[in-house]
Length: 171
Image (tube, rainbow, N blue to C red; front, side, top):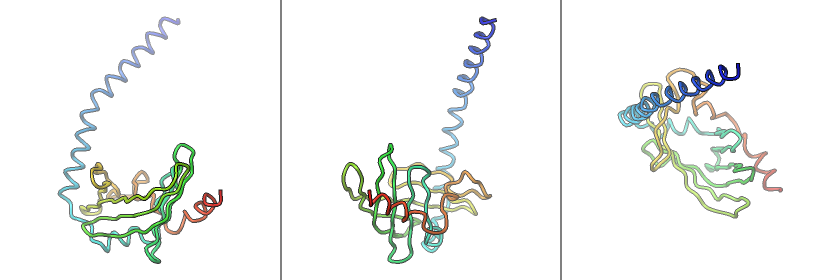
């Protein structure tokens, strides 16, 4: 019985490895197709970028969140890297060309550091593509239909950052 079970598990593992091996080229092709579609899409206008991010929090799961306040274009964030909490204060701006950037001074266990992060957005119909600049991979930021897995769904109205950021600062 143990031998039969062992053979069954061995066969199942072998089939799974083969299945993944055959899907890898297809997954790579899909990423290349997304990049090609994004490059052919139109740049999201500055007003579209502003409407997408104004007074919203971008939730990064358990790793943190960033808030894009309209007032003085203030950017606040908190992060958690391997259980070490940190926070950032700065500004966000739209330099044109479908880009959103935020510049912040980050404070954490390892010390303080300034950082600039930028994202590019392109749109084709209702689909919005995004990539981190300068060399990020294009991905579907917002699908043509409501998809809970889209990164766009992590943009929530309101400030979901400041309370946690204040707690981190107080530590």
